[in-house]
Length: 442
Image 1: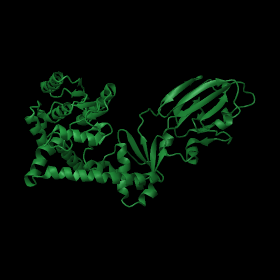
Image 2: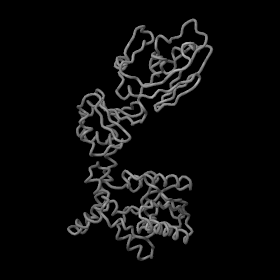
Image 3: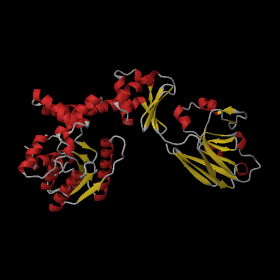
Image 4: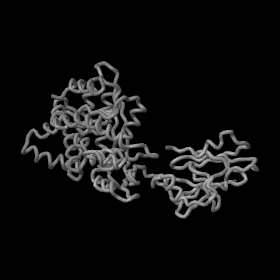
């Protein structure tokens, strides 16, 4: 039976709380039965609470009714609260956008109000619905194991409680709540499982929800061992690469169940299970083949798969560099200063710091490299195409895309952070110098 003692015991397990101990919690309250019961239980424990309610204004007066109930309850019980009006974009996945918006708000308010934890009212029934959703959508063990009871500073004290227990508690203690009319429609996938799939399953297997909760508990326990084993394997296969990482393909293919390892690697970059088949094809694809989502791209480069963030930046942009001055770019910062003498170790500072005669470069233009570009590498004394230089330097496709050139007219002065042009080297006649420093962010 659900009681304040049940929640007290759960808090002791989750955050090692003891009755009487100061534990400020931000409670996310929608106004529905689950969250109102959670608020009632935590308030009964006399914990210092802050309440937050997100009004997305999607259901007109019904949304305002929900907010009003939360406000009235908190006012009556002297619980500090925030009612936040949230405006969602007109396009895209509304449920995903709403989730991201509210969790960002929760973290902000928790920090501002000194709350150690954020409590949400997910129940065992929610967990079953989530697990089924993930199972049929396609996911790994983590998705099928359901919602974690604790994730960072987010706790879910009701995750072992069924919806019927919530309703019984609300009735017994006369906890006010409202019903969200959108829950009655199966437009959203979660509601489809709630309203149509689970009732049919429970007609045949009355204890289906309880059994599913026990199964997820076993899966979550197994997941701890699974994650440790996966992490150990990936440590040997993955290396840092620029602002992302690279996975060694030959070593991966020698592993039993290598598809599982590949999946666990790519999902951290926001790829979903539906993209795994195409990503797997990259293992045998030609150089340059890739798969991308909104945030990351996976590119085949020789014997590696390289994960790199998608950085939206115009490829044909030209940026002026004043001297002295600095330019901030997506992957680093270029700083130019004037100096009247060279330090003793000036040659050793290359390739990230170079010096050029001031009379040769009053200002410069930064741009991306293009096919056909060439320069005279310092010390070589003859022309070389950049494409050939990149091959000799063993630059990956992604690394080539991140290269910047400092130019003067048709001349390439410096392949930034890599090689100076021989025509801009220091001569004995120079009396003033330009110091160029490349500070990479990665």
